[in-house]
Length: 144
Image: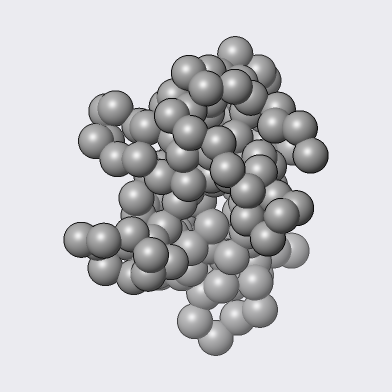
């Protein structure tokens, strides 16, 4: 298993990193690093002998966090930004309708269960609003 990155390399984190209970001084589930943040690799290790783990120092956030190889990319690689991430609570900015039927009233809060960033011009979120199956919504129709 050869690491993709080397000590000192800058990397961008691809998903929001929350405390799984192993980060001291932060409550379980607390956001440690938001997706899109750039840090530098300060050490390289393995987990279960089959996953590369990088200790990444995020200077602006003042934290060193462990990241898997699949969670980081070079900072100059193509990247689609969206302030919304999986696990966020969002508010519908306007009524959300399908086939002329309003499914979700403006101002309703929901929980994001996934985000699709494959098309940089059309980022969508699957949101679980109370009383509904997950609804796919463009990210611009939601606010944090």
